[in-house]
Amino acid sequence: MQRTTDKGNIDADAIRRDFPIFSGRKLVYLDSAATSQKPKHVIEAMKSYYERTNANVHRGVYKLSEEATQAYEDAHRKVAQFIGADSWDQIIFTRNATEAINLVAYSWGLANVRKGDEILVTRMEHHSNLVPWQFVAKRTGAKLKFIEIDKDGNLELDKLDKLITNKTKLVAVTHVSNVLGTINDIEKITKIAHQKGARVLVDAAQSVPHMPVRVGDADFVVFSGHKMCGPTGIGVLYAKRELLEKMEPFLYGGDMISKVTYEGAEWNALPWKFEAGTPNIAGGVGMGAAIDYLQSIGMDNVRAHEIELTEYAIQKLSKIKEVTIYGNPKERGGVVSFNVSGVHAHDLASVLDDDKVCVRAGHHCAQPLLTKLRIGACARASFYIYSTREDVDALVASIERVKKVFGV
Ligand code: C6P
Image: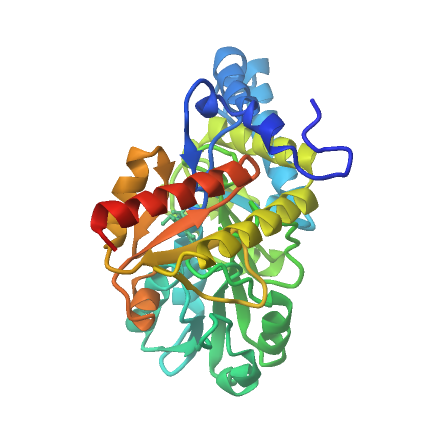
């Protein structure tokens, strides 16, 4: 089916028809940064897996188990190809981006960070890329330092050279802020970090689903399947081979071993060393189908569509004088956070919900950032391949109704 127009633009109306959730009802879904909707291709791939291929992986010598194993391994291959990883065995399936960061924190962080070392994060991190590093810093006696943001929500990278010292062991940075939408210059950060001998972890939870992303020279890259048309319960850790080979496992048990005696055990080859127990096989199959689906559209087209819609939304929202938009970054993902003066974000979101407009409201799991912005909460509209200008118009119309309801 054609999902782009003759000019190469995304045909969001055609794409919407791939998503059963939109069928036969009004649904203005503007919360794709929290989780994306799922196309029938993904739902059917998982259904078909359970109906036709289900067996445990790496255990049976019978054909069905071999087929399940193949499907699960193929999913790793698709992910590797999608993000430009050298090899599929550098792709570790986790539950989500959060678990992938915790894997790095426990397996690499606790073994490599020492008292007096430094871990550098940014002021715009999601809790998932902040709290694990607070934990590692506390446990090891290392110092947590921050890359500041300017008034527009850009990272202050001109000071990075000084901020990263020879004590810095890790720079953990989000590729795209889930609140401000800022797209950070990962290449520049990675280059400076490596010059100083620090490792780089990229939280790509808000970038891999929305734009072409290559792992490049980053040491660790994490993201979640559920934000990119895939199922919940499957996430990805990519890491450089030399790191994965040196790291101790995160979880211990079945499938992650090559040999076990009563006294001890040896570890399995990559990536299984880090995938203990029966994995989320159907989730892997769904993730593979999600990648096929996104590639059928083309990630450049996904990005172009979101740029267009985000600009349209900002232009429309800026015309409402009671609306404050947070962040004006040089480059922005498909995320617009805002408040309507005199209305709490939760009240705003519940009135929008009456109009079937779904936005997230609250601190967006980035509470320190919101505190820095001197707000307790805000609303956030976020876009994806199935989002349309009509969705933005519905949001704007509903905000006008909010103003009437609250008399602002
Ligand atoms: N942000 C949002 O509404 P998980 O929950 O592990 O799949 O993803 C965590 C995560 C990590 N980093 C960034 C930048 C994120 O945006 C998220 C998830 C969602 O903004 C849910 S809290």
